[in-house]
Image (cartoon, rainbow, N blue to C red; front, side, top):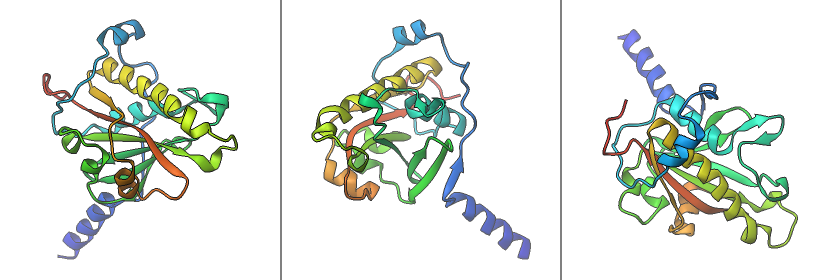
Length: 207
């Protein structure tokens, strides 16, 4: 009985872990760039299967990881790097810590439905939310003019990663910013500028 209680506590600890270290990104995997460009498309119907930690970690690294000292896989205007990447899944809300290549838990509730108005959003295994942190910016009007552009560059990286490994995805600009901010418990000065839904597409089996 004691062993059962101990195992139960360990399992609950894993379920509600505050930080999940992601596997090192596979920087040589996937299809060649030109083939990924040829196969890039928007997908709005997903299988319910969760992504493996390897696929999720690779996707996040492609979007906004570090590929060299203090530099990222996507550019930002004047190198502001003001975007935070949130990951909304069935097991809660997470923030991607690019330096540690880890997920930091923000909430343990399923908030997927709050991240978009489209019918497929609530069932998509992964919903990314690109959040602009105005406290990192000292240029008036920067967030309004450039943050969505910066996020769009990251979203294109996600599209290409998805195409390279057979995942489906779609970028989303239609969402209730107030509802998303509340669901993610964003602090003052932080605002969502773009979303992206991803998962295994309905038309092919998940591996």
